[in-house]
Image (tube, rainbow over all chains, first blue to last red; front, side, top):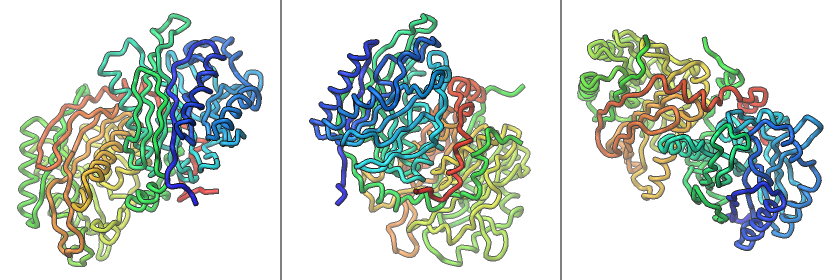
Length: 297
Length: 297
């Protein structure tokens, strides 16, 4: 019988430039959360290093990893020891000059259940991701695991209702977003508040629109811009888990590390979708403009 | 020169079974809001009557109106007197046995700027809309007015990110939702809170995803179920205006009528979309599953 809930653990960490230290931190987090009963554990985006996209430096590509390889060995072992599904995030070296921002999902036996290559790639001052990552070419495909079908997306994807919808149409029972998002320290308090709230709001809305839980895990802490061109990034933490009506089930703080667990119902989506049967009434006959870049007449 | 802001007025009203009284109330609201400087005034959904969809009664079709006709004369005159753009909501009689839930937008000279026939039609106990309304066949087309291009949608549409996105892709500078949504009085406080928050959250998210303001106007007050089968509907008011980061600019109360105005920037969208250029990075090559009912493999 399928259990009626799952305990989810989130690892909101701050990272240093030392990869070995970061890995030890992540493995300890997986152990700690598993000890608290977590059967699904989610790490932030690009958790093995500092957020290196603050500068366009070709040496950054030294940080990329082969998949499978040392990265999958390390986190596969951690998942197997923890007997938990682990959502990890890698800088994938696919070929010389071809890199991706790739989430790797480990099943609770340590095997790779599947990967997702970030589809929407941002590019802003301090977030030079188009330089580092080729856009994903695996599409929006949920990943089957022993605890269910997971709609794993990454950071910038979170702003796109299309990505969430397609995962749900393909049977995802939950949306999961490893993330690295923060403030420009030069922004004022009101602007910071608007940005953080917008980020939470749109992800809660993906839960509402699709009637499934959302898990979003961000890093925290300040990271300097090595080039000195900007004031760096103040990662805003605020990782959260929302239920299928968008209700907040767990909310982590902004400014400090947080390893927390929460029980999420696996039967509530069925109820919520019966009350709010949005999928029944979609006007698929009229949605084709979604496939256009713009449609101004 | 285009002004840098517009004053928007919302008319959150409760209605009776007397149509003449409801019309007088709406016309007075338009006058009041215009006197406070509103240049765009939005009324709730189906504002000329009680929310008649609580029962499937063929006599309800007597409430439907021809467009153009007395309805457009009445509200066109009101818009012209107020020198304001007015978003009104009608029960359109298109042919015998063919009715729509149709928003009518009047320009500030009283002319009809355009109409929108509700595309997503709900059907729940107490909200028997599929009985009353044929699904709209005009698509998601914004309406050009003297104050800008308006993405007018209606109530149940608010749960569909696709509708908001298509309006924005077609150049809508603002999303507007006349609404009639309320609680089942039998639901407990937590469920009520989840529902109201989900409703606000998903509409704020449409603002975030598309970088444009959202105006949502709901009715308020309790309306009995004439059939006695349910406990009626407690319309939850809570009309609001959000800016292009989803920030709340105006929030009306839950339980009482509210005629309020707020100034909304017309230049802020340009700024916000430069910071968060979501339209640049959409993966239109990978969105075709949106056109499917479901896509489970």
